[in-house]
Image (tube, rainbow, N blue to C red):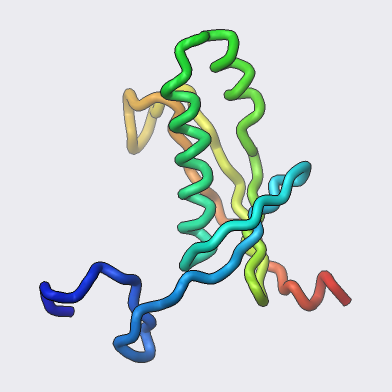
Length: 119
């Protein structure tokens, strides 16, 4: 990739940029329609928004309420595949991001096919 090209995600098969696809974020009690490139990137973008709202809130009671409501599992529904992740939230990072507040890590759960669920 040369320096004059925009920073797109590229398809492995050819040198064309990947377009955004429609995904549904399933939190169990809520479903959110979004666009993105990859299942995991969609999950990370959503969780970073939740983390940002925790970091920017000054009221300690509201922070506690928000921290209790962060998702523990998240499923990203694509056109053919459902990828699920277990989200491990920490108030303060102890491993890779030591000292950072409201850190999360994702653990892959087994994939499911959209067609197997709808049939």
